[in-house]
Length: 324
Image: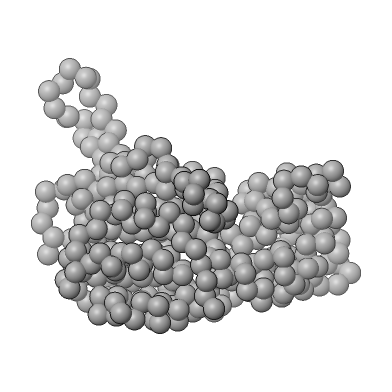
């Protein structure tokens, strides 16, 4: 059963300012929560293109969203390829060879079913083979990282992606154990992580393996690289007045989103007494909310996993160029 509680569902879709005849992209279909809201607001001329690299999500959507089949296009792909994939879809308008859509939504992180179904290897609470692939056709797994990557690289990703302050100790324990026998399961890895963290530190801050499992998942799926590429591409693909609505779940993702949005915002350097801009520093985005929106206390009570969620929304500025 594909059960997933959608985070910031109304806020994220409202941020898109949906037009009944618009074309929208859900880059992270997941459980279909955001997609269902977008589809419910579209008229006969509207269209939603939903991306996911997980067959579970795509199969679930075919059943859950069957009432909207006439205005839904499902794409099995990593969202880093959004621009290329949109070019392949008939009916998506283009501007100078770049597809144009009215809104793009990102809901980052792993969906609840991936955490809850132990066999995928995402959860530190269930024993399973070390996998963590969102796309089951991908080659890199957590098992390969743990058993073959250099100690220094393992320590780097644990610290950089998981902000794990005991990353070097954990990496050393992992490498020492794998020299004796391969590390095959999540349960084995959890015990090694615990061994690498001092006893006093293990008693605070939640499950001791949480940060390391997050780091490995990000590395296996190149989540930060994919997000950076995908967000830049999504901004290129926005039509004038189109919006990007982005939900992040940890500081690394939020920092990337904040910095990328900022890089497209107007940076006029003209003196304030100039009657008009002459420096050419006009941006292509404006921020809809300068500070990220966060879940309400009511939503947090219903879904504690939403606690770290942040929503940022930006709008593409008018270009004065017609789209064909």
